[in-house]
Image (cartoon, rainbow, N blue to C red):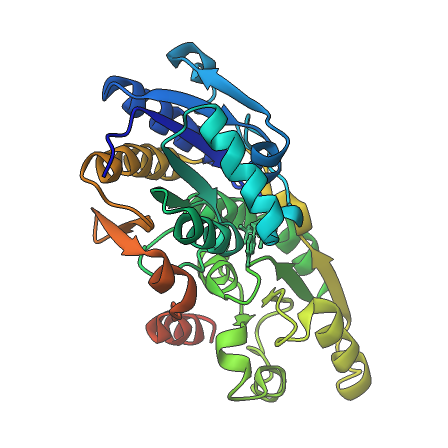
Length: 326
Ligand code: ADP
């Protein structure tokens, strides 16, 4: 394999807090290793439209504490076509970029895998998504910050919920994964979480209502994962209004609140370790792997596994929530 001299770094898909810490780590660890580092703006779009700038250490100063991504992010349909990827590859060659580091979720890593195979270029991925839905890593960059934001929001909603004796459905993100909902529920002392991993097996809403919530409670908070499988908070509220009209039900959808904000210490550290890990992977000749953090150890997870294998929610979390909400 030809020696890597220049690497390109981009952020793609949904933004996540900690992406900047990852950009900083990749840039600085890359420069420390003797690589030239190029920042690619707006994800794969910038690779196609040639928005590529050399990054020095000072380009990533003072960003570790910032949410979002200084490289901007985008969703790029053109990259899903062979013609678009050819233009991206030509621009890569034009800037003498030998390898790419892609920070993003499963869509971005899917694009990375296809591109790497098509043009035989080394690509290393970092899991950047609040959803925590990538296999092979205990946590993704941004997940811990989003979880803390959810906890902060639910604490405030609880003040209103208890004052008015209401049933609150609070919808959180997570796409088809229930990590934010289940752990958000445990962290905020909510009564229940309705998550897609369980919805396929039972009617969680009916079970919840039949159990009657705890009689001594004058309000109930239920976290709902946004997935269509759960019906979302709106869908569940509609069902309650029709099937259990004795409950005064309210809905809050946290939405993009969950994506923003300064990353937690945990996310900054994770992003820094993973960013440095991406450079180690390239030095070691790894390609087409996602950097994972498994039991506090940096590991390399083949893209195929990271994207396609299911990452289950630990059933003991569901059980813990049940036990604590009596
Ligand atoms: P995320 O990375 O957060 O999951 P998306 O699913 O929107 O976000 O994917 C981000 C980008 O990755 C897409 O806009 C597209 O440019 C690229 N991408 C996703 N899937 C593919 C694919 N099958 N082939 C090529 N590129 C893809």
